[in-house]
Amino acid sequence: MKKITIIALLMSVCVLGAFAKKGRQPIAFKELPKVVKKEVKQIYTPKEVQLITSEKKAFRHYEFTLILDDGSQVVFNEKAQVIKAKSEQGVKDIFIPTEIAEYIKATFPHAVITEYEKDSNKQVIVLNDTMTLVFKKNGKFLRIDD
Image 1 (tube, rainbow, N blue to C red):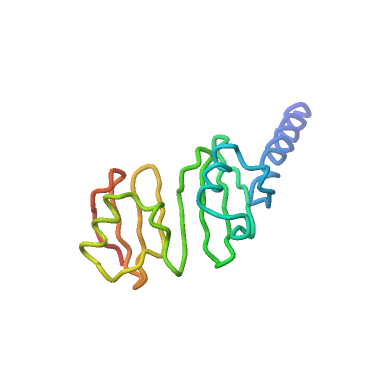
Image 2: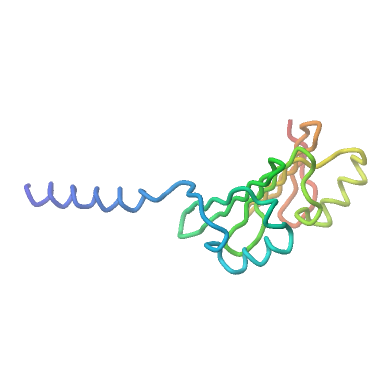
């Protein structure tokens, strides 16, 4: 019984150690993966980026969040793909897939995209009037959520 207790205690310590670094950690630009650094340099100037954080996700995946001087936020994965973007002034066009951008311009010509999020199954767009549009992974329109 004593061995089982000791083994359980050791396993608990190992699990706690594994999760100790979980959460957002501020990092320097030079700590970004090369592919992410290259992408960020093409889009932003160093003065625009106020803060960079790194967050470890499941299965050794990382997300890198950039907070910009205008309050906008952009989240890249370790492959330099934008998975989230948020800006009250409007998300940059380069982050929005062409099919989705064309659909929104045709259907909501005066709307501004304030949020974009992409996961493995869908893409979500929030417009400045707080309307939420959901698209398939391939960019085909699915529905409007309120």
